[in-house]
Image 1 (tube, chains in turn blue, purple):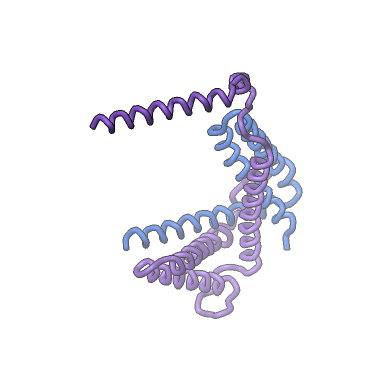
Image 2: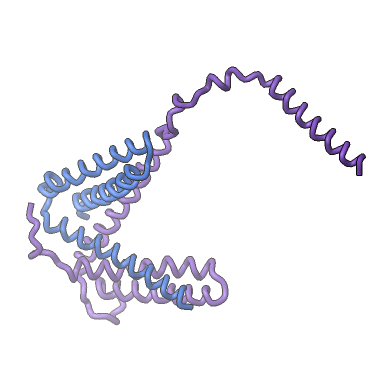
Amino acid sequence: MNTELIISMGFVGAMLSMLGMGLLIAYYGSSKTRNIGFVFLIVGAGLAYYLAEMGMDAHPSVSFMNGMLAFLGGMLGGIIGIIIFLVAIIKS
Amino acid sequence: MDMSTDNLDIMQFFVSMLIVGIGVALLSTGIFTSYFGAGKSQKIGFGLLFLGIITLTFVIDMAFGTIGIMPDQFESATFKDALVSGVSALSGMIIGMFMILFVLMKVDTVDDLEDLDLEDLEDLDLDEELKKLEEELNQTENKEEKSEEKE
């Protein structure tokens, strides 16, 4: 089992959720909540920097990019599946 | 960092996980709809469930060749790598979400109460306020009784 791939893909997932949620919280939050949103954004950007600069040098970048491809494929497949479900329910 | 797309294996990683994603989504939505739905919706749920099971069975057969219906389209080792990548990224997303929820719940996100003028509240004499309210109530009751007597 490729442990490095698991860790780096885990970081990718955490980075995506930090950036996404950080953006939402920083935009819609007020006072303290907004500050926390900015902190999440900084943490997400830090994770992205780590993955781009150091994470990929630790293991072959080809396998990492293939992992990203697999993740994107899985997400897209999930979205297509939900669209199929919605079409089936709405059309009935 | 090598960002070239020459070595990317779209068929082995992207397409395999695309089919797995569709299968998992159909399976999960099918389970929910068949369990919670009624009448026609329940039947659609069973249809989705069946379709999800078929999709996942076919993709597993394409990767591992356990049944032998479909051609061996995917290599088992790369399929495992792709599956591990997708699952670990999803796990990372879930962990990130939990971290965000934990921080938001732990940190006191209520706006500062410094702006609220509490001095007015401290000056209030509750007994006097109660007496005033009682007097007002009595006055309205007396008015109602007088109007009823006139009628």
